[in-house]
Length: 145
Image (tube, rainbow, N blue to C red; front, side, top):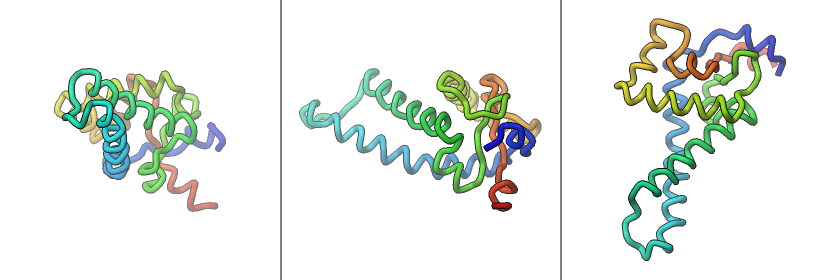
């Protein structure tokens, strides 16, 4: 899609963003279950835990989001709600922009979600601003096709 057209799209509402996150969370939970099941035989069936396990799961989450954002600008939940992530130039975010966005999103959540609630007062969240990305509403573009 033309980056100039994407830059003219309005910001996605916080409601749509949260719903897309809810949809994506179901898929991520399934992926994390499978990833844990893969590790269990190597752990002799004992409970999996510890810092390496946590980092392993975080790495999978980062790969999930970064891959979708880098390839199409949308996760599956974002496609359903017709929202998309772009960088300041109107292109899909790079791997490094995606990584920064995810790090800052974790910080936003750690601050009791304040980085997300900021979206109620500004057209961006903390992690939008800090990673030079933004979530746009493409519902008008897709309805014209």
